[in-house]
Image (tube, rainbow, N blue to C red; front, side):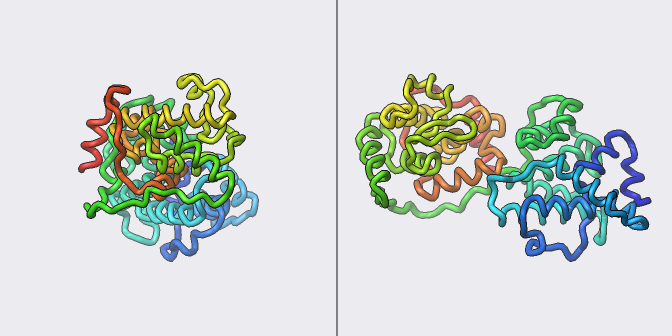
Length: 354
């Protein structure tokens, strides 16, 4: 039997080898090979797992399919991530497993952790689960239930079934993000002038742009930032409704509508006023940091505070990048009288500066 299976043959180890995705990859695996659908990545990973290697002498189709299906059940599909990002995350994760188990290369758990961490920072739930598992079971690293809880929480928040179960074992705990999970600080560049003009390409866009141009100054919000949010949220559709019941041009969920006194979320004027009020509050809460404001608008200010920065969710990271593509400034003026700053802001700033 494969030695990895023998080493892990306890109730948690068996569960991890079956569904956690600790796969043995070929040394020749590369990013180009990883391209394809998320389902294909996980099927490929599953049939290369230690359990499959243990049954090489009896390569029954039933065993292969069973292992593959178990892995598919365990890990979420990255529906909001583009194929290239999925391919990169899969390649990083699989390379990490080769170093973790010494399959075709010298065993190097430090390298495995670095690769898992890079994939985790991109939002890969399976890599987050793997790191949680390593820290919870001291597999090549010192046991650290706080870090295990952190990574299980990340994966669980994305729907990773077994991360949710493991979180019940290790319990919730606060821990700082490891260095490898922090976004690199961009190099300092000279201030560039941004053209403060939005060019509408359709009559609907023009109508919304005129509305925003009229209302945004009341809230001291740049029309370009508000229009960037509207483009990313609803693509200028005043009747848009998301699966999570976010509504209207600025996709206000019912709780946010109630918070900012929006009674008719599909009324463009009320919706934009509510969205502008929320943006004004977020800008004050995060002291004008556009990236944090965008992340909070997408995932909630509590999530940003919990991760002390942009959450490692593919959807949120893609959203922040999209907003910054439309609004190319790192900071925005804010009214400090609107609200006190986030109590986590100092720690977020320290982590960003490291």
